[in-house]
Length: 136
Image (tube, rainbow, N blue to C red; front, side, top):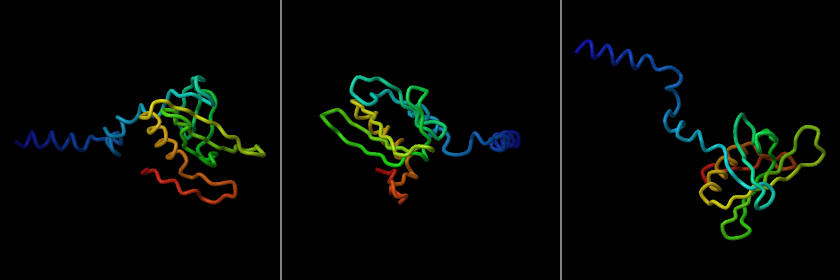
């Protein structure tokens, strides 16, 4: 019995920082941060990812989360969900606006969740904090 207790204690004490956080709940969500979408218009295939504090399109074009000023979600037609991302980077005089489109409702909902998380510090053009509720 003492040997079993010693093994259990050793296993508990051997947990490194990998055991921290929410563990399996976090790991099961790790693949959902890259999306197949349309960029700008229907049929213009692209991938969009949320990694390293940036939104990246096609693995090359990226914007830092803190440069996002405004986000929108809308729908033009049945089963076409559009997302608008306004951003202004250092050295830009005016903000730019990009659109990401989805036909898959489930992918669109996950994308919206990730976009809201990326935009937690969004501000409008006057620098006023925008309230982004990540629970919706």
